[in-house]
Image (cartoon, rainbow, N blue to C red; front, top):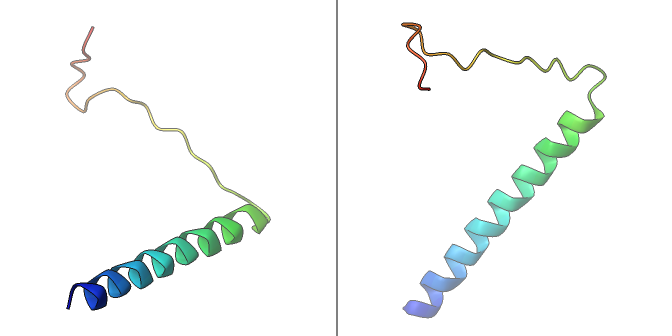
Amino acid sequence: MYRRLFNSQTTAIEILQKAQQDTEEMYMSAPDHNIRLFDSKKPDGDDEK
């Protein structure tokens, strides 16, 4: 029972890691990365100082 659980969890982790690698490769090979920087100020303008 625990072996089956361990194997299923291991398979799930491998699938997630592969998906992350694939999407990172897609991002890096895209012609335009379209990176945007957002202001870190809070919407009400009350920044922590």
